[in-house]
Length: 556
Image 1 (cartoon, one colour):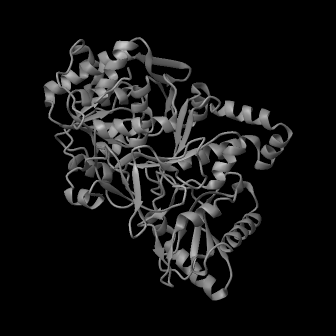
Image 2 (image 1 turned 180 degrees about the vertical axis):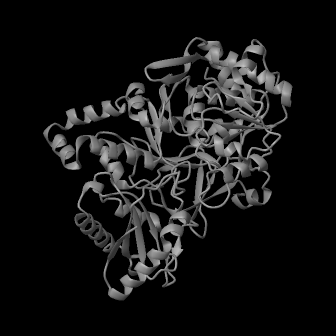
Image 3 (image 1 turned 135 degrees about the vertical axis):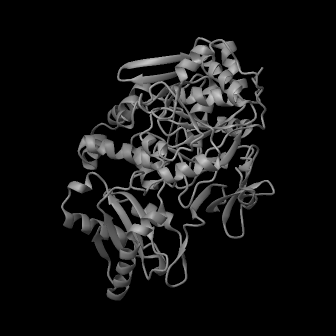
């Protein structure tokens, strides 16, 4: 009989009964691993859950969770939900202003703290009545001045005890705050249903084998990593290995050989650039493929740990079609999908049913339609119950069972969905006509010289492409790069209506990162920040381009 569940804890109890000694979690430090079986993990987090229930009851106290990915991140998450309380995940790259807002808005009473490079800035804004619980591996000095408690001490003191709380399918147990490309983030409430049912309904599309190998490296504070890694491991009795550090990602991928791997487009772009840098150039790779296609493909796939996968997912932002085709040339099949914190597991391509440029077709049980304005609306079981303490915003987004995604889209005759841009990202040029940036950015991204790019043009006489050079391009003579970028702009312009044509290119001499505020913690472009930095010069160049009737380029 197929197992049926209703809560996260039901998944846990299944594997405790069937495979208690199978390894669930693996932390890595160099060549050494620390492992937890289903039983040892359960015993540890339940001891802490018993303490949490004793201290805070089981009626939904908000408990912050700030740590880089590690086994204790998941154990803490399990302890919080098992005790009937609510986790508030924080990003380790989050700035003090946003962190202070979340801690106060959610009235966080306890902060579970692991390794986090932003702790010092967050400590300065930590509410006076918020206690700190240090995870193993946290900076020993992190608790200074906070009367911090230690996870190990509590786990030892309450060993053998269990929380008495009984989880319910509709119970809110976590509130991830959206990373926010504009303004302060919103807390998107999640129940056991809204975290588990999306994984269930996507299981046929993903085709994941039993007992899969999984690698956790993207922030667990983001719902996609939490569902695709944490819930997936619970769903299929998977083993999760934690990436030691982003600098060791390729090593950890190769050693783990994950059966499922999820990367935002920025991650797939960085892996692509890493391969090219290691080989020397795309020309070298092309020659290798021409001389021995199968051997070259096998070599690169093995080096990346992508030689035994069931599903490779790209989502969270648009990915250039040219990048998907580059991976295709290596025999690596990326499948683009779509979901958001408010509604996961909605639309996806599969290896056998894929259309490049599309986010795919709705998975079973999901309905889609377009509003009169062209916005994609979705209906499915287990949507988020809404925004925490923001009923007005909940009412705006969740309407009659449909979630307004905020994305403009088109649907072709075969049911494939194409995202044409964010509703808020569309802009009007000086001529009063709308421009959708993503298709133009996608076309420009075919250039091997660019790694990041963003189209500006709100109120301009021409649009302006702002870009960051690829690593290989940075060692190319400036004149050659300028010629290449202007040629690419000319090529793209031939496909565009007059009002949308690129009038100038700006080369950003500083990469866009989370640290300098150009990317969200989930690696999405912050268009408003890019416009704030480059907009004034971009508007000047657009005006000059219109006057001179020529393409211009500038470096900033």
